[in-house]
Amino acid sequence: MKNFQIIAAILLVFSLLFISNHSNSAIPKTNKTLVDDGINELGILRGVEDSGYPLATLHIEFPERKFSEYFTINLEEVKNVNMGILQKWKGKYVAFTYNSDFTNSLIDLQINGKSAINTEPMQFSDNVQIVVGVLRGAGKVTESDLPSTISITTTDNQKLLFDYYVTPEMVKINGRKVMAYYEEVVSNTITKIKVSK
Image (cartoon, rainbow, N blue to C red; front, side, top):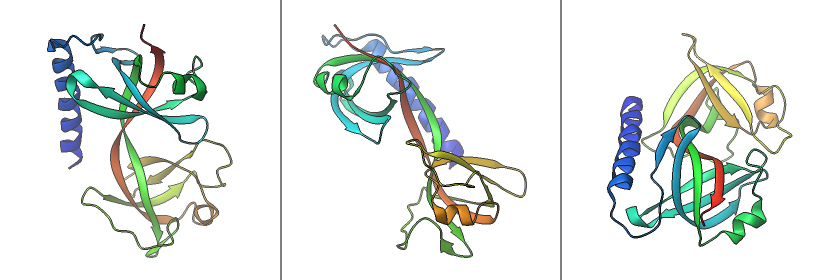
């Protein structure tokens, strides 16, 4: 399943590149190109949502390809914009650079069959994967605006990383053997953005 998801993501990126470079649309655009610091793209900014400072989620539409996508931006790292500027850009074309990476999204963390992060029973999708190993990096409660990076290391030394806000319950089981339920998701992170003139 993991290999299929990786192959599917690679095919999606290349098909988007092909469509972008062969479209005859009269809508102004730049060619999407793979560069050392990410993928260059052009689209209409449709929505801006505060995801907890310094993070924001941008909804960007690509009319010539008839689809839209969500992107994350860290306003402390992308210095030329803030929430006010992004709100003013809604409805306009923006040129941006982004990185697309697979990340592990933690859904549940259990010890002895009991969840350490959910109070209600969870319903898991078919895409959920399970890893059993020792929890590390959860030695103290997350106090910053950004999540902590925790890890789970299996008996064969496979180490999976997760960005998560550490809770007091997680601190209590740090260093112990846990069972984690997670999904691999594609994370699109904007590194540069400007309004297109």
